[in-house]
Length: 166
Image (cartoon, rainbow, N blue to C red; front, side, top):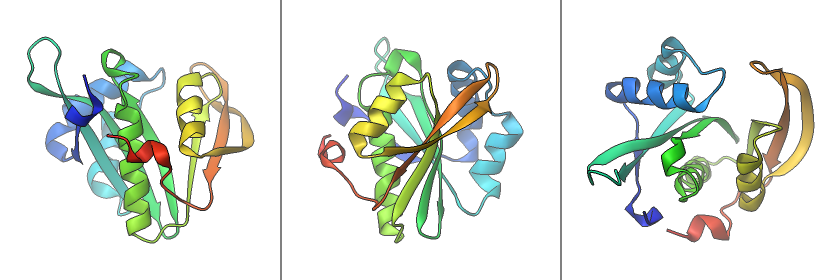
């Protein structure tokens, strides 16, 4: 699948079941339905995107991933990014993050922040290639299993060459 066949759109409460299923498939300590619903409709700072892609078997558009991020004043806070395993390494996560960074720039943000599991090499590589830099480690931040979080930052906020690709 070419990443230019990916459609990035704002999520609505109507896709909560699909987002929850992706959350449960992707994380060992997934957010609950209540937490996801609060981000979708109860948090004034939250933005929620979904990535729709053609299903390789049927060709129908399916939700392959989602991204929750906050824009709080001058900061874009990357909260939760998930792409179903069958759709990974196809540029979907990159497209979601780049869309969020663009939204932050449009709203006047000057930096972006995130935490990621220390063992999540794919995510660490993606964020590094997008221009994020490690600034700290938060010991035992994650549970199930207990694991350190790598804190990453992009200051100043910018769109690098990876965000110019389809």
